[in-house]
Image (cartoon, rainbow, N blue to C red; front, side):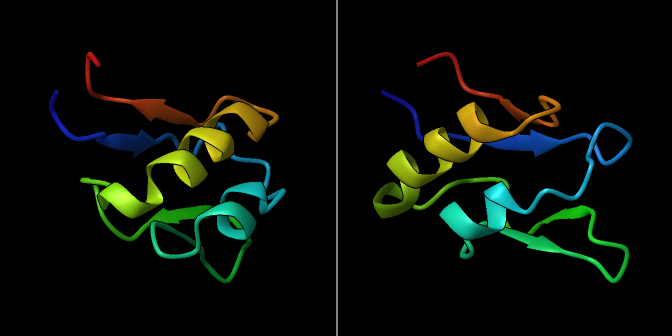
Length: 68
């Protein structure tokens, strides 16, 4: 199984911060509150938190890049 990879669409982001709350090691917010990706390849220990962040994103601004 390949590692989880993610991307973000800042145009869709509403700044709710759910991603940062769940996985601060992967997501951050800029001064406007919009998501900023800290890494594309998710550390294995952060996988579940990132999957939760994807599910909790109210606008679908976070996408999985992997097939697994």
